[in-house]
Amino acid sequence: MLGNRESLSKNVHFIGVFDPKIRIFDIIMKTANGSSYNSYLVRGSEGVAIMDTVKKEFSSDFFVRLEALCKYEEIKYIVLHHLEPDHSGALIELMSKAPYAKLIISGRAVMMLKGLVKTDIAFEVASTGKTISLGDKTIEFLSTPFLHWPDTMSSYLHEEKILFSGDVFGSHYYDERLYDDEVGDFSYAFKYYYDHIMRPFKHYVLEALKLYAKFEINTIAPLHGPILRSNPQFYIDKYAKWSSEAKFRKHQFGKKMVSVFYMSSYDNTQKMAQKVMQGADKVEGVVASMYDLASLDEQNMIDLLEESDAIIVGSPTINGDAVKPAWDLLSCMAYLESSGKIGAAFGSYGWTGEAPEMLHDRMRWLKFRLPVKPLKIKLIPTEDELMDCVAFGQEVAEITMGKMVEMEI
Ligand SMILES: Cc1cc2nc3c(=O)[nH]c(=O)nc-3n(C[C@H](O)[C@H](O)[C@H](O)COP(=O)(O)O)c2cc1C
Ligand SMILES: [Fe+2]
Ligand SMILES: [Fe+2]
Image (cartoon, rainbow, N blue to C red; front, side):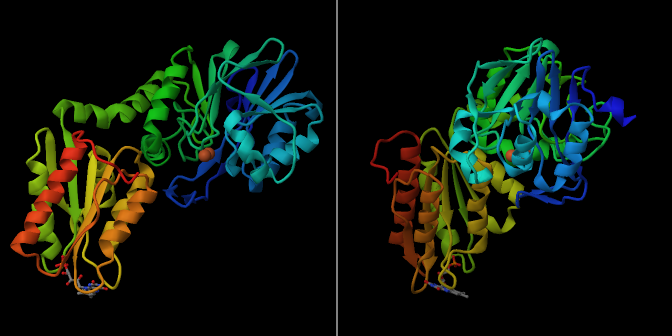
């Protein structure tokens, strides 16, 4: 059965491997359904192309599948859409076995290749529009950077209308039935993968979709999980929707979001937060909101951060540090685009008061724009100090609405 299944068409075959036992991928992703490292073999009248390899530990399975379908001398091209070790792990061994193979990588992959394979190897660079020929088969390259690493690219096999999408449209979902219309319900894995790998790069997703739209696509062959052949447009539409969603909601309001996140043990930082929000709320065009970090879970944090144009974080100083939920909040930026967001920090303290500056520094590393100095107040804020908090919130909100000031970044 599997023999037939592994053929996407007469000339295109799955030669990937399965990793049913993996439970955590790249530290950040839980993979309850295991995963696969997909690789494909394309046969043309004048040779064979191998589209990506697999994780090193699984190379022997990969070579068994490959050898069943072609001789190493027939391999004309090895295409690496993405250099991450889950796809480049068998590259060096494959190149040593395939004497006539030319390696094709993207322009942005050039800087990374040596660091990953630790040896000098010859390669050719592909950018959008470049094609390679296998006689009766033509593969066209598309530059789709940052999906998932800067080096990622995609390619399109004209004669078969297959898009080799790299990590785009992937799922960590192990199922040897291979095709979206035959595997179990992988909708959760598909969305989870998008949220963790693609969501920080929504603009790049939309750019990639524009490139894909030029082609009629019968099948999407991603690097992980099911091959999407039943209705590729369904998955493309999902990516388009998820990548435009937040902007759309904001446009509906036609306003800028200023969000104040805080945590407080004796209500001191809480009182500050209240006034910071009041200050922000005075500004026309701003929706000001405040959230107690104690009651937000990670998904709320990610959603709220994504919607917010300005993020103001308040934490008391506890044992020389900001509180853990404040760090947790900022760590969620790993899943989001941070460039362009405005940041600010504040908090009450007893004697050393490091927390607001530490949060401010962290936001600088996360590429927030930081127009105001951190605001710290000793213990219980006075009426005058509360007025300072109002001014602080108002200033951040006015800058969010476009008031020109010198930014730290
Ligand atoms: C366990 C504990 C540790 C603290 N450690 C620090 C500290 O290292 N430096 C400091 O400036 N204040 C420290 N403080 C004082 C708090 O920052 C101060 O009481 C602050 O006003 C609390 O604000 P909140 O009511 O918003 O929680 C500590 C307080 C507690 C309860
Ligand atoms: Fe990747
Ligand atoms: Fe991958």
